[in-house]
Length: 189
Image (cartoon, rainbow, N blue to C red; front, side, top):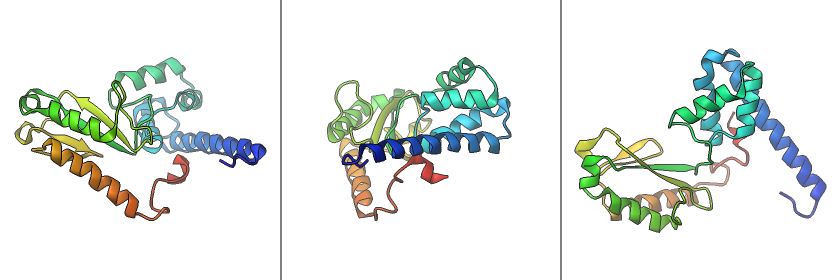
């Protein structure tokens, strides 16, 4: 945003909002404007915005001609969906029985410390990482296991978790600005 020109800031913000709504309109149209396609629609919205913003849920309900409560009910029923913004990189730490016995709590502690997460905080202030604990990832033979951006990493130690985070950060720094996260989530469509 250009803080020297408030009018330009307002116009840019309005354009961003229009782009967000147009993005959802395109998703719904691609899915055939069908309420039976609600879950794939929500998955696609979340893949672009990294969460399900309330205003976009209401807009999707309007487009699908269904009550917003139905959309919200689906979004809150499935644990895959998030109503809170997530970081560019999502880390799931398994804390199921096998992983817990193999000290998954130490992994969580090390990553929370490396990411400078306060108690109760899941996402870093710079929106780079979200750290979540899950009940089971179904990879007990590789315990303790984490999944980063959909890729499983087994037999992890606190040190290897911190090294993985550092490697991700280094890779991001070596990318050119054009390859990094788009300026607007709607630039992905």
